[in-house]
Each structure stands twice: as structure tokens, then as C-alpha cells.
Image (tube, rainbow, N blue to C red):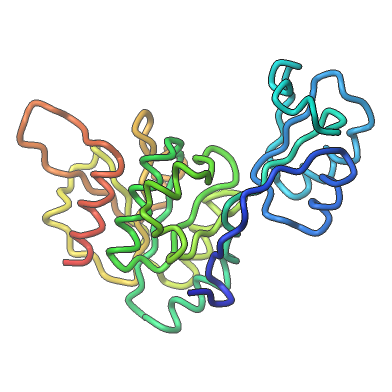
Amino acid sequence: MVGFFYIYIMQKHIIFGIHPVLEALRSQKPIDKIQILKESDNTQELLNLAKELHVKVSFVPHQKFRKYQSKNHQGVVAFMAPIDFADFEATIENALDKNPEALFLLLDGVTDVRNFGSILRTAESAGVSAVIVPQQGSARINEDMVKTSAGAIFNIPLCKVNHLKDAIYFLQAHEVKLIGASEKSNQSLFDANIQKPAALVMGSEGFGIHHSIIKMLDHTYHIPMKGKTQSLNVSVAAGLFLYELVR
């Protein structure tokens, strides 16, 4: 199912060579990342354009390019993302027009592809209207993620923004309540009375939600822990939060 704001399947593809990669950038193909040999020349235009479009670039040693030795790579390869990203503002506005009690999910620093895929699977099942991630510091959209999501990644809008703070400002301007999962909160999730539309922010397992993001939220809640374990896997925690919101 593909609408004008839904993600769609992209054929797996690797682009070789400076000029083909430049053309892909100019036509705004969904490039996930670019790798450049450390000793490569004549890449400044490519670097400038990649920076402008917020495409990740890494400089790698010759060992990384050995598997491409039969290709005319010119020291540059680009990896296409398996999906295209939905336009953030259009997606949010359309979701709120269709459902005044829409639910959104923001992921702050979730870098494990399997956790990310599991979260997408749960989010789609819980009726989340869109998942929003930052340009930097998120898991790659790759085959492992698609597999772990059980195909859910193709049935839920996935938006990428330059900074989560920009997304939060936009959501707040549309009167969406921002809530976060934090084990440091003194409020239990099970005592929460959350009004929708709402957006849930989940942080990384290691660091949680960034402090600067926490300060922008309307409320934070913790999951009551009855045993000796003090934390849950982020995909499990996201599932508990999402279905508590559904309930």
C-alpha cells in the first residue's frame, strides 16, 4: 500500500564511481551512506553535496574496497536505502487531519537494527501514525531491520529529520503532547492519564533520552519494576508504553 506520504520499497543497490554517485545525490535518491577511500582525489564536490543533503560519508581504508575490485568504483561507493522516507511535516499534518487522537513515536539514539525493527513492528501493530528519527545517530535501514520488522516498515510512515528538537517544536505547535520514557521519572506509566494526540519519545538503551530533549517534553514516566532487574530492552519498553497508550 503506497500513498503520497507512505514509504515504498526500493531495490537493493550499490552505486559505484564519483559521477554516478553525484548524479544520485543531485536527483535526491534515498542514499543511506557513502564510503570514500582515504586517498581518493576529486571528491570535494561530492562531499559538499552530501553535507548539504545530510548524507553520511565515511573515509575507509583499501581493505574495505577489496570486494569491489572488479568494479570501476574510483574510490567511491554509495549505498541506497531499502525504503524512501516520508515527508515529516506533510505526514504529521495528514495524520492529524485524519485522526485528531493520532499517536507518534520518536526514537532518540536507537542504533541497534534489530531493536529498531522490533519497535517498528510493534508501532505499526499499535496504530502509530508515524515514526520519526534524527538524521544522525540512528540505526541503518538495512535488510536485517526489514526482516526484524516483519514487513511493518513498509506499512508505517518513517520520517527522518535533521534534529529531533525541530520535530518536537513542530509537534508542539500542532498541540501534540510530548511524553518520554525515563527510569529517572517519579511518575509511573500506569498512573499516567495521557491526552491525545501524543508523541512518545524513546531513548537509547545506554543513555536514554538526551537531557536537552527531556527538558522539552510535557511529561516523563517510568515502567514499574518489581524484580531485581532495573531496566528493559528498548524494544520491550517501547511496546509497553505504546500499548499502555492504546489502552
